[in-house]
Image (cartoon, rainbow, N blue to C red; front, side, top):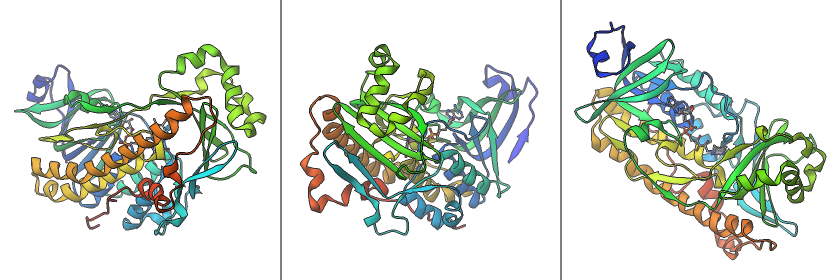
Length: 419
Ligand SMILES: Cc1cc2nc3c(=O)[nH]c(=O)nc-3n(C[C@H](O)[C@H](O)[C@H](O)COP(=O)(O)OP(=O)(O)OC[C@H]3O[C@@H](n4cnc5c(N)ncnc54)[C@H](O)[C@@H]3O)c2cc1C
């Protein structure tokens, strides 16, 4: 990796409207330190590839993001020799996803029946997971992390992406790379800059996230409750519940207009156990609004650029699989691209191979999410009738399918690169 401090009259400065403080060159520039970006960083670092990870935030703390590590990701951690140490971090285990209606309890996905050493979803705050992976990557001198690096521009020459420009410490900086990977999430700046248009699938709902205290006697893991016209999902997060209150698409303004007390009542109606702590929710600033989307790009790459994770496909929260799929993209990208990166030449067919291996699993899980959204979420949200579980969920031969799909998908990725 080389760093050039440029004078203001250098060639790099002329290509940009900004004064560039320095230009660094590297083999791979990864934009975004979420699950996809950090795992790809670790995998490429282990291969001795020079790389830079640019993350806009100054740390890895995330509010209201997924804290779920699925069995497929635990198997990847095992392949990297990290599973045991990861499980030493404070976490809890979710062995099934169930929903409870006033009349019955229905298990949507029972992970404990899966054939794996990790038959559960590991609930670990995302920041701890990201820090753990970054600490591993930092053992390799060829890995460089820049926090507070807000990537704003692509460098393109002759139609080929050659790197990025970011605003960071002291002003503008430039990174030149053989390959730039956009792992910058659902609002991907690089996706916009490169002109890729996602194919959107409509979702019938949005989600309000907030936290309430969790008591020692509360059940562990997570749970879902369905009431008349409402769905609440609760995920254990240490001494708090991270709670998702599912609302009809576009309904947030109406809920705000009805007032905080009406919202509190409606939550307690679905989960009466929260009555003794609902007063902790008293201000709209405690609520994070998530516009539920589901989309994917037709094409995930162009010369010099690859998009992975949410940047390539925004996932619905159904099944909480976004992290799982982002990480599997990173594993496939490392499997396919390590050698070309070591050899200093990444061709279109290499990038196409990454998309080919990941597109079908993504389409299948998105189709499954869409089915659940329409057959469960839309029905509950649009009706004041008591919810009747759809028959397909109760067919014995389909019993393990949702757990398998959520935990692994149709084609789980495995680490093929050597350490
Ligand atoms: C409220 C909420 C709850 C969720 N719950 C779950 C869950 O329980 N389970 C689950 O699996 N998934 C969940 N998800 C989805 C999950 O968080 C994403 O699918 C997953 O994080 C995607 O990983 P990623 O690495 O592709 O992108 P992200 O995790 O979004 O990471 C992108 C990173 O890029 C950085 N970045 C963005 N723009 C720039 C830029 N211009 N320059 C530099 N850096 C930039 C961001 O700061 C961020 O760190 C949830 C999402 C939300 C919003």
